[in-house]
Image (cartoon, rainbow over all chains, first blue to last red; front, top):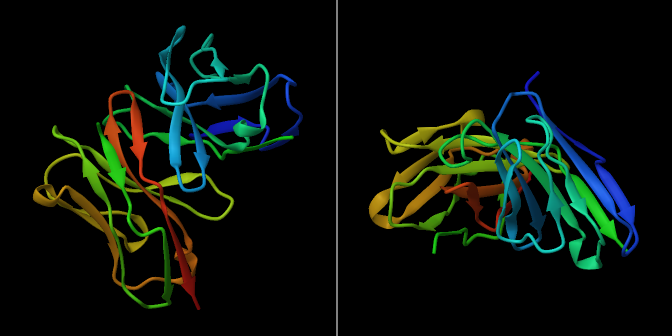
Length: 114
Length: 111
């Protein structure tokens, strides 16, 4: 089954404790992206990747890092989480640049930073 | 700057009522538009999309949307909603390397 998976689905952590949210897709998509969803703000792009070893900032990249060492995986790293990063995070993938092609979304990771 | 506006933040309807959710966009070039739905506790799913051609687009679950270029709009419609349509609906515009989302509309359908 074609899908985007994320782990963990729920995470409670404390300020400053490094964490990684994994994202994996089995559709051989070149493009992958991370969004955060906040009430009243919709979804905003954090980082995206056009292909292996090619990543770039989205609209709200501060406090986040990403890597793309393999085509299927695109982890999101919070080196020193802060309470303002409490949010719902979605990973997405698509075949081309995430423009005209349809993006497929993962199930989401709900993060609470205390 | 490109943007998407959804003016209805919360909509409450009774079952069998007709639905229309507004979506306006700001972009001067060729647009690709999407409606996504997020059921409670679930991820975003594509309802329908417009790339070109017929401006009336039909999607899944009986939803449709009409692209009106002169009004910069892409409103979502359904003639008769069901309780199971309770969800949050997002309009999105395709831009270089990302989707630009509206703030979403929470739809609650009362049985």
